[in-house]
Length: 147
Image (cartoon, rainbow, N blue to C red; front, side, top):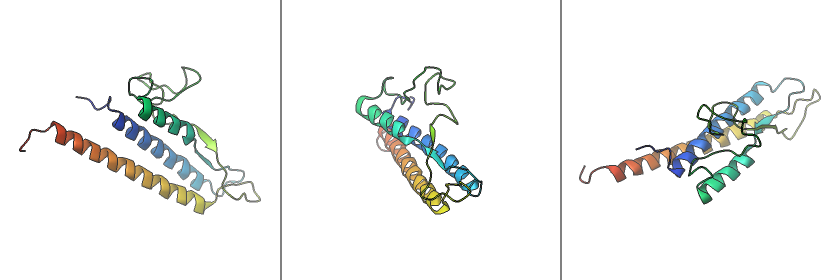
C-alpha cells in the first residue's frame, strides 16, 4: 500500500518541501547581508497556500495529489510530469526587502532574517511531527489486534 494517494501525507510533504526551500532562500539572504545592492528574497507562499487549501477542500485537481497551478504546462514539471513535485526551484522566489535598506542598497536585516529562519524551523518541525503521528496512526490501524 502506498501513502501517495492520502491527502494528509501529500499536504505535509508539500509543506515540508516548501519550508526546506524557504530555509535555503533565507540562508542566502543572511550570506549576502553585506553585499551591496542585494535585495532580501523569500518564497511566495500565497500561491502555495491556495493550492493547499484547494487540496484540503476538494482533494485537488488530480485525484487527491498535490499540484501547483502553472500558466504553461512546461513550467515547473518533475521527472514524473506533475507540476510542483520536483526538487529545487519549484517555488516562486520573490523580492521581499526587510524594514531597512542601507546606503549601499542592501535590504537584509539580520534580526528579521533570523526570526524568519526560526519561524520556518518551527513550522517544519510541526509538519514533521504531524507526519510522524499520522504514520503512527496508519501503522496502528493496519496492525493486527493484540500485538
